[in-house]
Image (cartoon, rainbow, N blue to C red):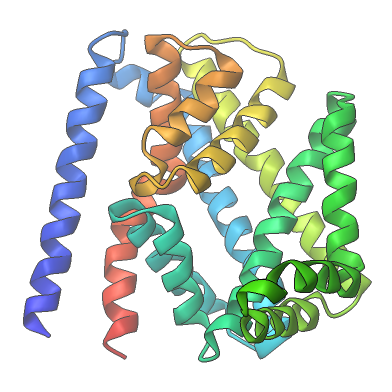
Length: 288
């Protein structure tokens, strides 16, 4: 027990040291000062970053509570723990451990988690389709919405694909979790509402961080940046999405030293800072 605690503290210290080093190396290329970080833009971004993290937790809570009556407190602790492990290892591990901490039936809860992830992407795509009048985003959003609402059709489609590799039992358990979490249309619409608020809040946080350093882009660019960041951070497997998250943001708002600093500071106030808190939450959950 003591060894585990010391290991957690060591990893947290290494993460903090890396954060300091990365900020310093990138910030040396731009005019980063204490006055910038104390500006109304950046302080408001910190506040909206906190709201965004809570909305992300609420999105998961809507589904996991409906499926298995998990409390909001445990959902928050599991989310913080997942953020910590996603940052110190990689995003996929963070999600897997978060799912494990949320439920005793692993694959059932994984189905719930996949529904929450799909809803987050659906919400972002809907906003890009409406605000940016993006047809591709609208088509992808419709595909996801159909997969969520008409989940039995989706299940049979995936069932036919997985039959040759004999993973049907796992699929059945995941579908059971997905289907119960989906519950009814009202539950899905409530989760989509939380997802839309999450996307709006996160893009506002990125916008405010960019304004701190004089970057002016169309609001739709910041929405796209959030979607790119989440997608690339999730699939590239780097610890905490480091590099991948920043790449997703700079693809939308431009690749320059200032944009890189903006991307990193955005991720710090929406994710990396919570990874440090998550180390404590993780230790508390695994010792319960």
